[in-house]
Length: 183
Image: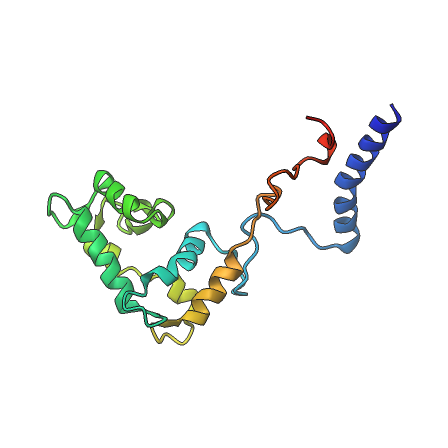
């Protein structure tokens, strides 16, 4: 009974302490999506985040730089491969083939690219749409992202906001301290 009361007290303190600290500081706690490592004054959307995470994969000539031309060549290839009926548009059925090649397009989906709202994506809507990675990382509008910029963006966007415990390298380690010694 004493052990159970100790656990209840510890759990209660763990739940109340962060709220008390936030109340004393006057600052609100960040919410999921509210953290912006690029200091632009607004939260980074999931769509922006997937573009930032994937930016390095567009370096087609492997010169450690990603250019707007490389991005456009990549999207043109994806579009050409997806437009199965050759009508110059990719509908939701054809969009699935783009997602099969690059999972980024499950988040930056057809609705994101369908700027005129007709339920399909034209070549211009897909290939010519500005890439958020360049908008966030290339304020000088050079249309070139260096390897350092891409790596920095990845490291600043790869954080876990789920609240789940990190996986341990030790496969015998327990994730729940309350089950120590129980098997």
